[in-house]
Image (cartoon, rainbow, N blue to C red; front, side, top):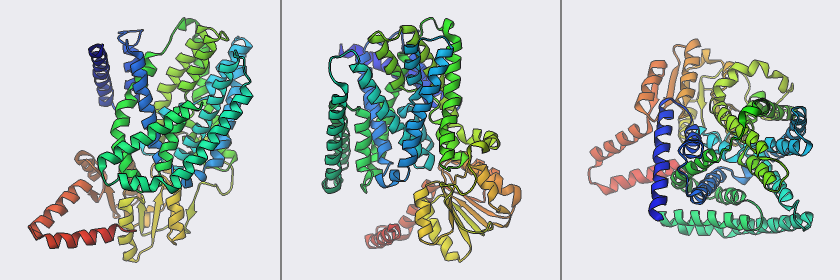
Length: 558
């Protein structure tokens, strides 16, 4: 038995490596490779899945690790600033999609109960897929990323309530009483966790951090404990996993925990997408091509438009509305569960499940590309999106400066950017700081710096800057495509500006030099060079190294 499970999992991983490696060679998203792997190993093709329960268990581990790591990036103080817009867009999108989806289904000839199930299935977007894509892009900390995670959480809560209502529709108990009881228990649990996180958790993590292995083991234990507890009381394990991460997000060790958990996340989340692909059910698809095409188009176009309209009404810029809108351009695993449950209790037929499954596959694959290449799509459609942007000051502009001309512009206020800012400030020249984290910009504004919220991928924002009189541009953004765009933009109007860019790979550094970068910072190269210089300078003199240590610690302190 053990040997057969081992062989089955080995085959799945080997096939995933081959397919994902091929797609990576073609520069395609890895998620696509995982889903295709699931379809290939499923009943439609190789049909090698015999231990579905084991794979499902591994996929659950992937989900909780993914959401835990996402929670580590969602400081409660940070999420507070996007709570209102997340709630309005989350609830609003569910209501409008359900309403419009119901009438589309009725026009296509589906019965009332079938139309209602389809409409509800079309409303939910996949938290797992979106967080994975945003994490891979490094956009979880952006404003649109926070808003997206916020309204996805709202959607998940609504989905849990709907699943409870459907499950109880054939039972003999009072669902409202049950829901009220679960909500009260949930609120009590949240209060208890909050108190524990404020008074006890910091001391525990500080003790555990003395051992790297113990810190990792404690983090996993904390994650699994909350996941199991929330699953046991009637909520989902996903909510427990997300909260476990959020509770540790204020810890000084959250970066260290995140780095250690990333490897576990990347391994286990593979099984979620493989399982998703293997469970795709297609029955008489050829007879339902029109409904599948219509529903897929509605999800890919209609859902983003709904979010853009809602965010535009709340005076957000069209760019953030567009990027957040793309995150609802697919249906989730909850959608398939809702319809599957409807089939089980006899509300709808297997044909409806097939239609929703095909719609899910199409929208998941298409939206993956849309989100991955959103920064390249937006410039092509931005001129048509003015309709979704209200006139006047926008709530997400965060512009704290006057004038257009600056001698020095710094893109990215991260660890490297903080060090750069100290040197730039000492030059005594007029400078501007740009970052896509609104909290960092607010902090800089309070300290009296000229700064603005913005993404270096946003060509409209770059067009607002006057690079013609700029003497120096520094980018601490690690993304090569972003830096290539920025460098080319500067060189079109200014051939003499000093352009300093960061990169982590030799080939990418050469591309940046060829595009016009004056100097490319390579942290690993510079770090190794500096360490070798210290060895040559001090030899085995420990007292000199301790002096360097003290100087380095003073420099790292805020």
